[in-house]
Length: 282
Ligand SMILES: C[S@@+](CC[C@H](N)C(=O)[O-])C[C@H]1O[C@@H](n2cnc3c(N)ncnc32)[C@H](O)[C@@H]1O
Image: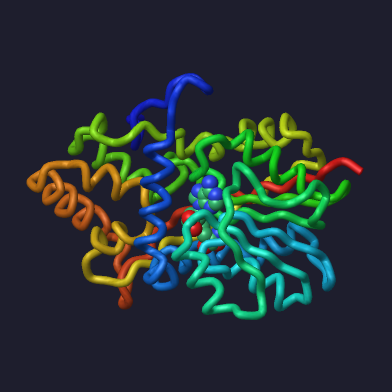
């Protein structure tokens, strides 16, 4: 199956700084519409994530790549001392405005600004595959955890198992010039449970568990393509790098392909996810 980004080179040989800058700008631009787009999907994961972390009142939670703050705020509602960090200032501004009782600050998943062993639990809901160096972000999560603390992150399932991404993969690499996108890390490297579990163990976690969740993309109608341009950042970066006629063809083909998933409100497209959890050894 063709990839939705240029093939990533061997680790350590590629400079992803342009991708990282584009990601940060892309999420800043989407912060104001995040709740009506992306959060409708990512929120479906939050209850299982809080459960996997075994959160209890009084526990200190760090929510990495917190976006507009939903996971950290849910942990606060459980009585935890929650702190959310995100590298997009507009996301942090939204989170602070929505949840004044929870602490939010700008920060990078690859360089957490906290001392060793400062949190009882760390979460990362659909943020890990956006970072440039996954192994570094995993080792940072482990560093700030107390011994025995749990880390949980989520990931979209691979295109072969996902109606949404199978549909997009069947259209975009055929229609678009994929070489126009900035080099980006493989968005589905963590969709292989064996590989993701291996990365968690290599980062020093044990008691590794995987759950599969039947998440769906909920899109307001009628223009699915327009909705999807606000849903994420990676695919829009590819789309926006194309000539106008190619963008029009992508819009036509994607909007036609999504018709079987129409609902009275818009579209509901299966997009399963994986929830991984590991524990820092005691
Ligand atoms: C799909 S959103 C997930 C937001 C939130 N966790 C949720 O549950 O909806 C991905 C988030 O990751 C953030 N992000 C990406 N790379 C990051 C990094 N290196 N450090 C911190 N945040 C990052 C983006 O700014 C964005 O808010």
